[in-house]
Amino acid sequence: MPKTILIVDDSFIMRTIIKDIVESDGDLSVCGMAENGKVGLQKVRELKPDLVLLDIEMPEMSGLEMLKRLMLVRRQKVIIISSVAQTGSPQALEARRLGATDVIAKPSGAMSLDLNEKKGHDIVRAIRRALELDAA
Figure (cartoon, rainbow, N blue to C red):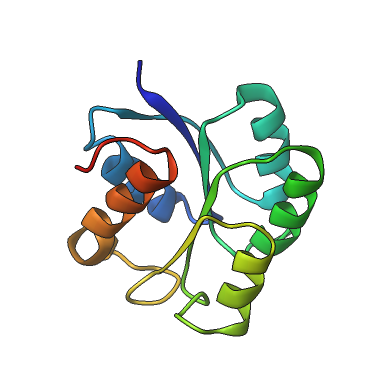
């Protein structure tokens, strides 16, 4: 049975690109998507995904705020995929401190149409590692 992934990103285009990346691995399945942290928290409660892929900059509730609230109620595996989460940035360090399993920077800003090409393999590898699946 495939492991379930929830995608939380305010951009419909980015959610679609990330969904295609996730579903390129037969061991993974996207169980839902959310456009901000508030909706993301509701979806986590409803869907109980194995892992959440989470953007940081979103309206209504940011990814970091969602991560804080999520870790209070459930030890959830979360990987951050965000344009502001460059290695060593305050946001990346805060995400790690709050419990994110991994932090992956979008290569070309918030609208990284080249995400699959530049980071697709890294994203799948990070998911597989976080879920303790055999190496891809």
